[in-house]
Length: 332
Image (tube, rainbow, N blue to C red; front, side):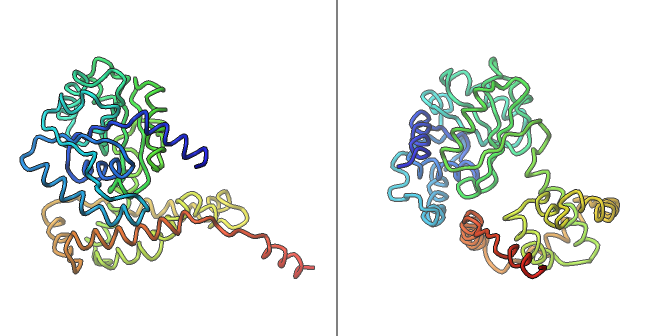
């Protein structure tokens, strides 16, 4: 076992008892990952039948976990369900909250969590856009809270946006980064709080223009999806927007791109649409949402394909200077 694995094991040993608050789609996915990493997980959710639904969703994650090389035998052996929030968080090293996306609900949850959790417990929220500063207003010790926003589904997609509030302690941020890294995630600390954070803002910007193009009759939903997955989707899986445009600038890189192609790009910004999700638009979009399979079947196919993309994108690039040497020789 190399030093990296030893360090990761040490971090997980120090954060072995995790409580997941909320057993919905995100909470269940987190639970699957925590269990597959050998952690002891307590899940709490007040909804009736939440325990059964959690086990059903855990079973659905097993093929993906196996494909990722994670153990799945007796996946739920270290799982406990506790409906009482106070009891569920009392002995936790880590609390990962996944409640409804409402500020008042999250403030109430964390006020109650703080009352019962140990003073050294790591308090994390999966919120997709609410600021830690706002949630922490309900806490006696706001420095304890930090956002750990995953990209869905958390057991598969690597990104976790770690977003500190105005009063979040630096030690809390560092613990959160270490914890997520030890789980095999890719945490990214944001330098500033903004609504929606980064990934969802980018997703919202692209989706706004996607809706506009469908509403304007330029393409159908399926045609637009095909365009994305056969162009920028492939490109961005290995190089983000800035690196892609840096490469698009040739030897001059991004400065050359901005000088020569920037004006055209800027003119497109002024032409982008600003559709509204009103009733006619929602009906149009819903009427085209036919993908030839059930949601469960589509999820399974998506996850299987996503694993292949992750594996390909993480493979080391076979870079060589041989083509450059050949060009020099031919120039001579």
